[in-house]
Length: 96
Image (tube, rainbow, N blue to C red; front, side):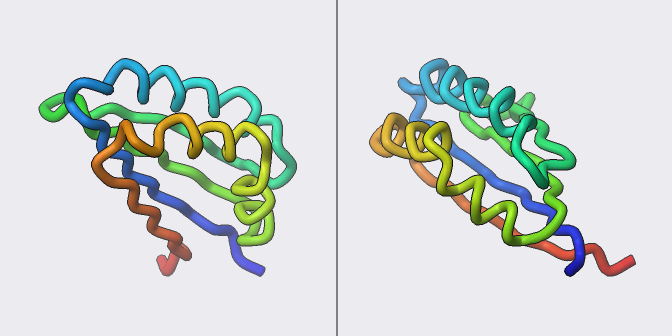
């Protein structure tokens, strides 16, 4: 099974940027310790500070599925649900 690259985009509501950022930062340490996590990096847009991007690499899709069922990920989803405008997740496979 090939490695899986994920680009996850979170757009916070203007009034919730710092709370959402704080919750995103809480995901980093436990996620990087998960089996199958190769890379897990958070970025914030310089021009639009409400936009956050996670760039992730997983050994395979099964590890991403496990990640999405962890307590820390479920906690993030429950806390930020009403604080974000949009969350999009792109699951990709390297082609070249």
